[in-house]
Image (tube, rainbow, N blue to C red; front, side):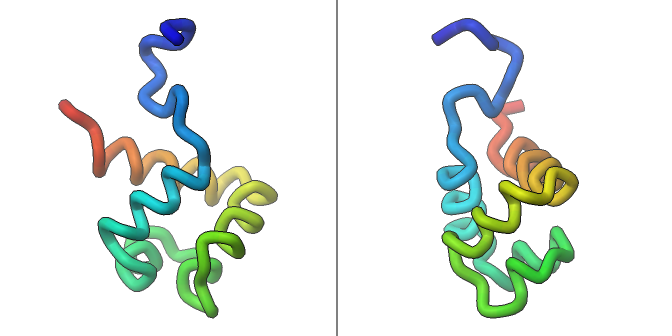
Amino acid sequence: MNQQPNNPLHGLTLEKIVTQLHERYGWDGLYYRIKVNCFNNDPSIKSSLKFLRKTQWARDKVEQLYIQTFSDK
């Protein structure tokens, strides 16, 4: 488990990250923070995951938002 002690996302799935951000901000809040259509045009967890798995730059932004939102520091 401690193979990546400095990685704040270690052990988290993309689905868990998106779900927690959605619970915190809602789709409108996510779209406000990250301008990607998967959060604006008929959003769902499933469609967002499909897009984010294919689009690295968007995934990077989502992961960064997660770290900023839920960081203990």
